[in-house]
Length: 423
Image 1 (cartoon, rainbow, N blue to C red):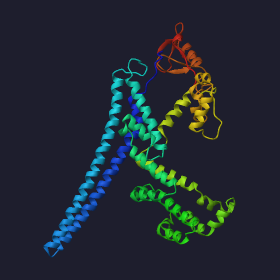
Image 2 (cartoon, rainbow, N blue to C red; image 1 turned 180 degrees about the horizontal axis):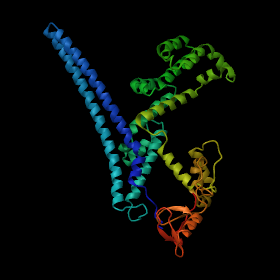
Image 3 (cartoon, rainbow, N blue to C red; image 1 turned 120 degrees about the vertical axis):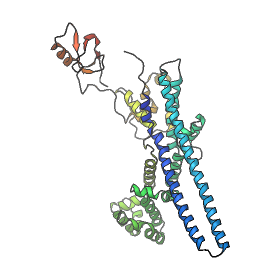
């Protein structure tokens, strides 16, 4: 048997990176729809102006209407050019991502391999993918809009077109505003995407207006709360009737609920008054935003790490029983205080960096196979239980130590059997 690692195919990587192609495609669809709406508006406006111009009795009045038509068309031209630039930018992103996959195909076709120490081209390709995974994780999880660490990493490797950082950074910005109890940016986003939210029957608009209402009640601005209720919440009476009931009850019981936090009778009102509502609102927005843009909610980096860690984890590995997540500073302090020899001799899964992730994942090692007692593999790749295979072969009148594959009826010797271990 060869001890060379089995490398995944190009098709495997295409499936893994499906979202990186889907995100710009979804953006292109929205860009085209936006252009269609702009066209419809300007065509209607131009048609109305032409009709008004035809009714004008003086040449001066006609001239003024004509100027309005020209000004409207010039404004439209600028908007169309802007949409065209967006389209070109998205096409460039898709092309560069396809080029990266085509580069992998060329390397595979040329016989490049990770284990070939004299050819580091394929290794570099995988390193680039790892850097992209890290950058993607940092982009999503670093809410520092001005100097996002993921964006800085992308720029350092000149990979700006490989990840749709502008789309992710916008979600970070809106999420940060929500967590800081500022709903203005979220409301603007909701107004811009009302048709999509209506299509998926989202409750984001209701929850956002509900939170505005709750804040007004908490600040004792009851007239403002009633005004907001009539303007925005009453339209949801049929859809979210129970929530509307709570909203009306909150006007009466808000003060009592705030004074009796532990009282079971006011538990439902305290849940509405809790600051955790902003975390819920942020998570709800991100879920909808990611779905809208085709962004996977689970970080690909953590998915790959989970698969890798689980495949290496055994019952001998150290497992963290800590309930609190350790910070980077805590991990660094622990590593500096740990004996160097122990760190070098321990497996990567037992390291502090992976121990918290390790504790939530299953073991790769299974004590006993659920299919066969003693599985063996034949040279053709078929796997059978050893005892049953020998019994079948014995009934097939073998010569000497000959064994027969029950499915393909190919003959081999007992020396060709490879013992398999359940994992």
